[in-house]
Amino acid sequence: MPVNKRSKYRGSRTCGGGTHKNRRGAGNRGGRGRAGHRDHRFSHFLLYGEIHNGKDGFYNQTTREEKTISIGQLDQMAAALLAAGKASREGDIIIIDADQIGIDKILGNGKITVKMNVSARSFSAQAKSKIEAMGGQALVI
Image 1 (cartoon, rainbow, N blue to C red):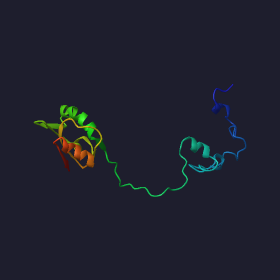
Image 2 (image 1 turned 90 degrees about the vertical axis):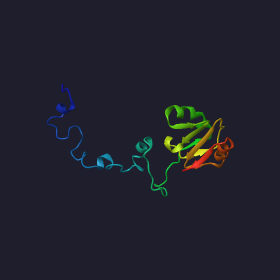
Image 3 (image 1 turned 90 degrees about the horizontal axis):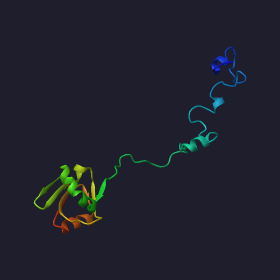
Image 4 (image 1 turned 180 degrees about the vertical axis):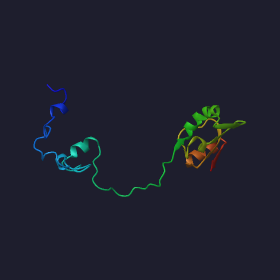
């Protein structure tokens, strides 16, 4: 009794594949590559989420996601930023450069408990007013 299929089919012309015409070309496997992904092989591509039925409008490749943080979160992080050396203190004012910590815009959600001089690329109107109400400055880079 043969141990593997290779030795089992030694001397056989078709190696168990039926007639010699059956395993010719890509037609026996339904085409090459992604052929039939919308027709006869749709269930395979549907399972793996790879089904694609034409183009869908334009895709703008120049846009960049703006990284934001709320002023309340920045207030809570102030002590940790001072300890890490990413912020500095001058008297009772904490100076934070948002660009240094990878933030583009400061939003106005939350409360401020300390005076802060924050420099960032942009601020929401509410964030700017909260910073200035505490006696700090909102500097646009």
